[in-house]
Amino acid sequence: MSFYDQDETDINVTSSALPTGAATEAKQDSIITQLTDSTMIRGADVTVGTTPVEVTFTGTTRSISIKAASTNTGVIYVGTSTVLSDGTNAVAELTADSAVSFDYNDGDLAVYVVASIAGQRIFKMALTP
Image (cartoon, rainbow, N blue to C red; front, side, top):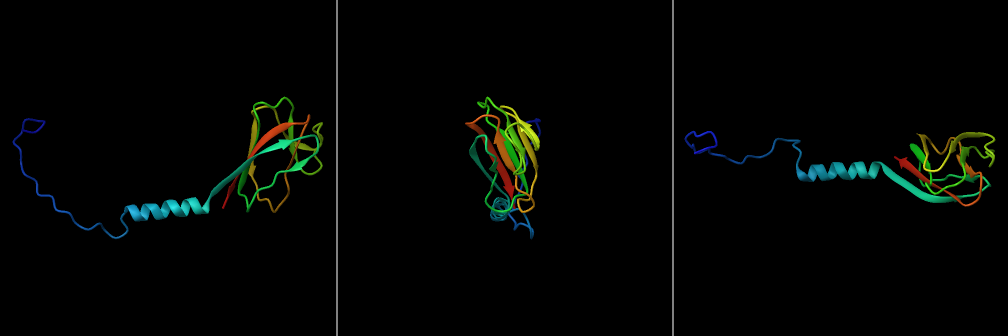
């Protein structure tokens, strides 16, 4: 008896080949490998003081994120090489545990960070093609 109290019937199930282009396990593994190889996440923990430091990455970047450590007691300023520890020439300021993200091709213009006091930390991350 089935769940619905009907008479049981034998069903003949025959295996047949998958159609061309079907999502086989090998094909799915290949797609995952292509995605992994084509987009990488790179990052690091960087100590920042009162002298501007260039935020660098390996390879060409598509977008970057800079996050201030939650333990920071000072302010991190983001800008070009002319950014100063008092915030002059900054395009963004990061207090503890805050972040900024933007599309960025590192061949265009260098990004620098500087802190209002010594011994601050940032976490940098980039998506690379």
